Amino acid sequence: MFQANDVQAAADVLRSGGVLAFATETVYGLGADARNGDAVAAVYAAKGRPAFNPLIIHVADLAMAERFGVFSDTARLLAEAFWPGPLSLVVPLRKDAGLSSLVTAGLDSVAIRVPAHSGAQAVLAAFDGPVAAPSANPSGGISPTKSAHVRAGLNGRIDGVLEGGDCAVGLESTILLVDADVALLRAGGVAVEDIEAVLRGAIARPEDPETPQSPGQLASHYAPNAAVRINASEKRAGEIYIGFGAVDDADLSLSEMGSVNEAAANLFSVLHAADAMAKDGQTIAIAPVPMMGLGLAINDRLTRAAADRGEI
Image 1 (spheres, rainbow, N blue to C red):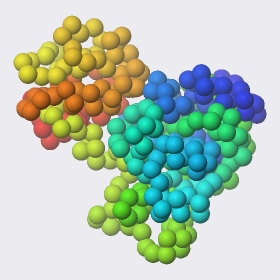
Image 2: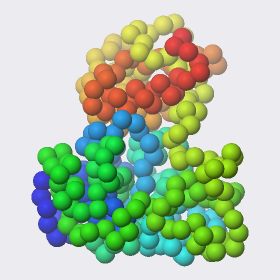
Image 3: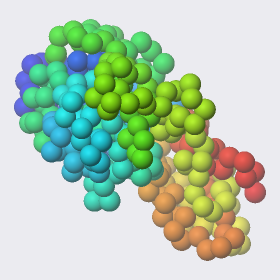
């Protein structure tokens, strides 16, 4: 793992499909090319993250953000008021965005932020692409605000750290869902009062019963239209069978090599493909995936996909 101030070297890590820690004004992020499913899976593996939740993509400016998300007048107003800065906007995903489905967790929306930190700005401009970046710490640990925190938690698990000093805000970004209305998904580095001042009106708060929660919390977000049978050791009549490893009668495969990292990268796109193949009344059956490494997160999502339907 290298640690340096070399922005071009850091951008090369991202281009090569590597995993790079870099400072933002909020916390250090653990970044990968958001278009590369294998690279994004490596982020989850490095963190030991037990679930695939949507990730925030970081971009250099609003113009780049609009390559990946659809911005309403309200979303653009918020972006112009608070970007660069510690505000993430969840907006509809462009159909031609080209992002890994692992970034969006299979949803039709995407969370986007333009960080204000000069180092983050420099590497994003040099890379000229979207960088998916959760906090650069082992899952469940304290978010890192110094490069020393990153090294202590992730040394040997990632490809590099772009030194950026201490994080000025030290608190994760505020996340807003910008749909027909604006709703607070996570409080953070931009005060709600400042947001409401820009919008000239109140926004929905987390304590309100109808407020949408952070993307990925609802099991239905992950459920195909077809019923799902998990831990299926064989294909039954009338099923679309998703294999893992060497499976002779699979219609689709998460990973023919039996790689949990590859399966993670393919998970949501394969589920979408299976759902498109399924005719009325057909079930999607999914072979067992080992409960190790990213297999824990894969099984978490598959359990959600099968929720309230039973293991047929």
